[in-house]
Length: 222
Image 1 (cartoon, rainbow, N blue to C red):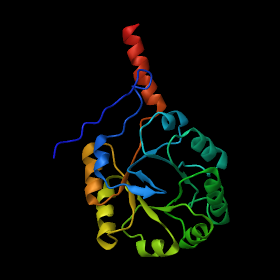
Image 2 (cartoon, rainbow, N blue to C red; image 1 turned 120 degrees about the vertical axis):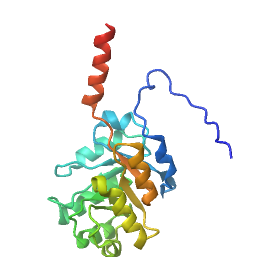
Image 3 (cartoon, rainbow, N blue to C red; image 1 turned 120 degrees about the horizontal axis):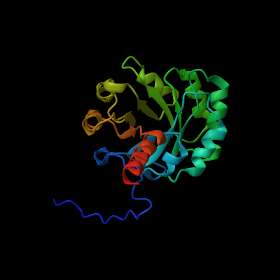
Image 4 (cartoon, rainbow, N blue to C red; image 1 turned 90 degrees about the vertical axis):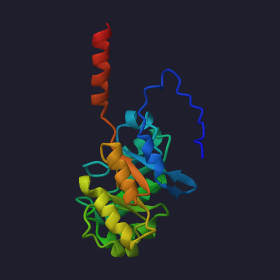
């Protein structure tokens, strides 16, 4: 079957926006509230969030989650945002309150760190009607217990071992929705998809890296 021709318009001012690797389109995606999501950009930089073609944003950062940060990202983003609500240092009742507030702010889902207890997952699922996503970093994770506690999706983030862990999970849980980090190359992304990931997260370059490239162009042309 011949490939479909897709008319494309980028404009002039938006022609240099960030574009995720096209190979991500090979994954099945996950349909959430009627919207099909295949790609997620891992960023909390509102300039990146506003200028990337990802289907969704995953806003997780290495500080105590703060509602003002999630609100800023949600208000800027043109696509669904999945908000980190702790599970490591920040946990228990505080994570539950953060999840409730994230739903009220318009988040499409809440993301929990790997150390989150099953009891906290259960408490959050009892309170919110958006997907609860639990991060998985090891094949030793008791996936069945996570699902029984109320986790809706798995977020596999294990660096170079991600495809291996995705494949391990997929053998025992053929239908569980899996989001997974794709890695730095098209080859690593395709390996993760073929292992069984339904959606791929990508880390875009920082605004500092992007602006350094722009400044280098200015220096050579002016």
